[in-house]
Length: 470
Image (cartoon, rainbow, N blue to C red; front, side, top):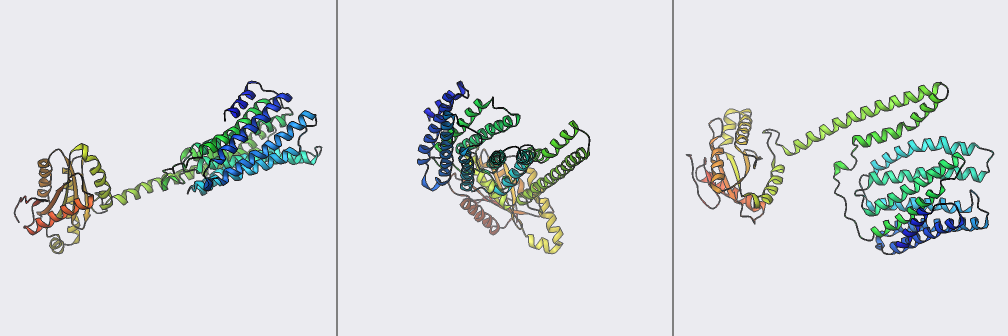
């Protein structure tokens, strides 16, 4: 790796197009390929196949660079040359290898990432097609090989752009290995774009910096393989994150989709006014309207998702937490109570609820449940939670400094039952070791003991604390 890095550094410090620098460039690429070979051999065998394709890609590049060097030293170098066949095959092997890395990632975001990457690549690809590919193909003064090479390279770069965007958007976690792969592809794209631009301008004055960037891209692949020798932890992306279309991401997609129309409009305005201006402006306006509509749908979808999330955590009748939320809150409270104080868990059951419901009607029964939940919620502090346990039963957890304070809170709850009704309370203090199931079982036993003792009373698990009359 050090030798390959020094080779890139030499190219950066002494750029140029002399035969000596051509030799230095070829040696730098060869050293990077050797570094990649040694690194790939250390990648675990089950995950090595995509890296072998990257190794094939660099090997083809080395063969092409050696062929170019030989032709340069002989004074027979030309463009295109047989080396370009090797370079094109190298790009295809590189693309196939990175696609293999995507499959190893096994991300559920793949479909959305491919579509988004396709939008970006299509927007740029249309410009490449119009400005670089079609003019070259239509130039009958150039040999067929020249026209073919001039058309193939921009299209391959569009493919690499697609893969870069797909990697950035689709990976569960952009670990070191994928990050170095993206850096390598980005360097290759940058140098290729510079070469295409210079060829379009009829010159090659800046080829020195391109050699530095190309050489760095090979070194980055070696660093990627070295980073892949240890398995990376899977990302913690949630289901909601797998295909989330955020506003910045939507803006990037809109910019890419509107790029051809924008360039068409600018060119038409700089030339003569014709229908192209109206077509370009109309396309941009329509795209902006579609983006606005999508943004509105995203906002509506987000609001609905938040509402569904609240419904999943909330009892629809009493509008307090449901049993699912209670389980989560209890686990979290048990974790925190070791530092914050005692944890008291209680089950509250409305006495003779069935008789009340039968005598006054189901609506009155619902009103009793709602009013009891509201009155009890108002009595609980920020470190306490209440949830509907099921039917006419409620669960309460209280984090308190001492047991007396917790019992006093439960007594207030018992005395606040609306409509002249009563409630039985069974409570248990967490000992700091038992699991949630055992703790709730003890509270449930205390509740049944309170009912057997005559109802309208609080019983603490392990004691008999009677309060109130039957």
